[in-house]
Image (cartoon, rainbow, N blue to C red; front, side):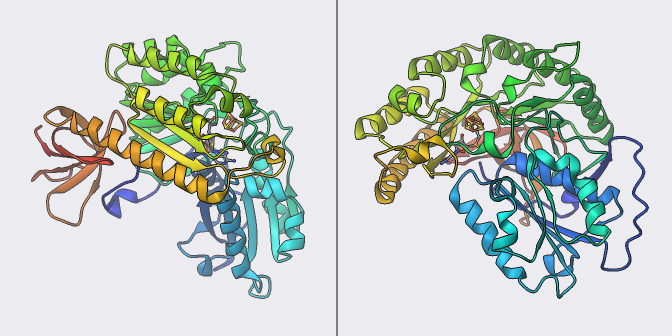
Length: 467
Ligand code: SAM
Ligand code: SF4
């Protein structure tokens, strides 16, 4: 869901969060040498990885700058879930052919780096660092090698059993703090590169997660979002053996934390205990993102999604059976190889049955190394585009109706932005809807306020401050 307001610059001042009393390196940056720029393409996990990479660099004495031109180190962190993101990063790299002559160091991080590996040096010989997300633990070492004058360094292992924890994370969002609790993925969806690029599933120790949440609360954060490709597959590797639902409760009980979100849940690992936890703890937000991908059991089997349409609908029934309304959002892929018109109709009918509050929908994009790339009956791009448009139009109607049904209700909003226009504010509800509202009050940023919904569109609500 996109933001439809301007966030004030003051509000976006970054917060630096030392996680341990780690010492910065002895590297002494001289002017212009110790600067870095990082641009991120992709999902929240990628955004948060960049926050952690920035933390590693800051701890080594580097300074972050706003433009690649002003930086000595230029990093691109990209996902390769769909081909477009991968193409974009190669066009960015193309800008820096003369980089070494200009004294710049160019690095490629993330899934594309993992996927292309050392071939990047062939394709773009001016690149100096290639590091996949499963190897970020090695970043300090790789940086030390660069500082020592080495011009080709790589971190491309995926078999690490460590998660990426940093001494310091530089957080871009002043209201919502992201925390990775599980990295990699052990599922094997036939269209997806994540198991290849991010490696096997590794859960972070519950004590380490809770320590970071307490530190975030001390810094003034009231909202945290737990991240993982399959966040609800979390398995505490320590003797405490907290289940995912128990971890949610423990995070919700940290003093000062008022909102806890989590994404992305895999339907196969979604059980009633998660709904019970949400019901019992008001700090657990009333929103679940539960990607379905397709409404056809036949396509789900070909996608190796490990559930059928009926099983998925049982999970939806669990959520709808909660004592408080929980908003549900999802992801769809259209045009998977062999998807017939009847399969696509099944997706539309599932959408109708579930009545999602939001959906991300994508045209299937064939990815290297995935089983689906070898499947017959590719759907022509034009037909994928048609199905996507039909799906999105239908979802728009559902979203509008669901938002309009909220008119007249009063909701709590965490205020995250102020418009340039006088008295216009915006924030998110617990259900993750954007609510724009009018208030004459001052200094509302970061506050929780009550707002009555006066009107609604497909992507946001409009209301007035009532207390
Ligand atoms: N792990 C999550 C899950 O299982 O739902 C989502 C991971 S992925 C970063 C986010 C979304 O990208 C997926 O839910 C899927 O809809 C989409 N996606 C992944 N691979 C894709 C592909 N090859 N083509 C199109 N969309 C894709
Ligand atoms: Fe990819 Fe499937 Fe793992 Fe999600 S669960 S990251 S879609 S393999």
